[in-house]
Length: 277
Image (cartoon, rainbow, N blue to C red; front, side, top):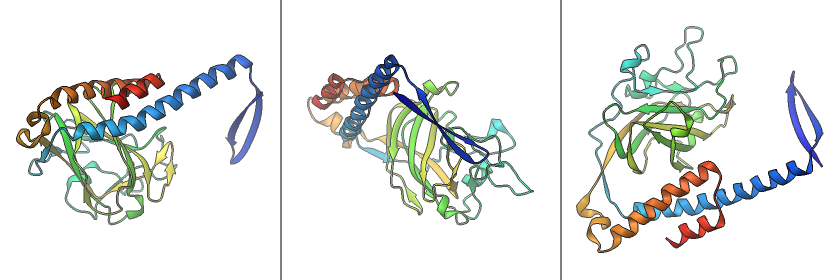
C-alpha cells in the first residue's frame, strides 16, 4: 500500500509514493465511513432545518441596519473584520471596511487578490460582522455588487455565528447559501434559533474563482444586515395545537446533529433519528 503526496517546489510539482502500514489503512477507512455518515446527516439536516423554519414566520425590519460603524482606523468604532483584508498597496486603498456601508457601489471592499499581499489567509476568505448590543435570532442581508470588480462577486457562502470569537470551536454553522446571483439582491431571511453577537460569511466560491491563499478573492460594493423578528400571530408554532412540542423536539435534534457533524461522529442511527422527526 502507498500514500501519494504532492509538493510544489519552485513551480514544479513532485509526487512521492510513501509506504503505509495496514493499521493506518484501517484507521483511514474508519474515518472515511464516519465522514460519509456525517455528509449524509448534513443532507438530512438541511431538510430538517427547512421544516423547522416553517414553524415560524418572520418580519424583516429593514429600517434598522445592524452595521452602522466601519472605521478602519478605530477598532472601537468598526463592526467589520476579515481574515483577508487587502492592505493599501502603492497608495491604492483596495479593501477598506468603510466602503462596505457608504452607499456607493463604485467604492468597494476586495479581499486579498495577489500573492504579494502577505500574509495570505490559509482558509476561506471571510467577512465578520460584530452586532454590538443588537444580538439577533434571525437576519437578512442586502448585497450590492461591486461596479469595478463584478467577476469577484461571491456565489456560495457558508454562514456561521458566535458569541465568542476566541476559538474556531465557538463558531456555529448556521446555513450555506449557493448559486447567489451576480447582481444586487436581498437574501432570504436566515433564522439562527439563538441570539448571536457575531456573524461570519465564509466565501466558498466566487464567479471567477480566483484563489489566493486558502480561498477565493471576493469583492463587495455595499452590504448591510437587518434583523428579522418572529411574527407570533402568523407563526404556526403558536397557532397549531401540538406543533410547538414537535418543533421543540426537532430543534433539539438539529442542534445535536450539528455537533455530530462538527465532530465527525455521526452514525446511521443519528441519520434515521433525524429523518423520523
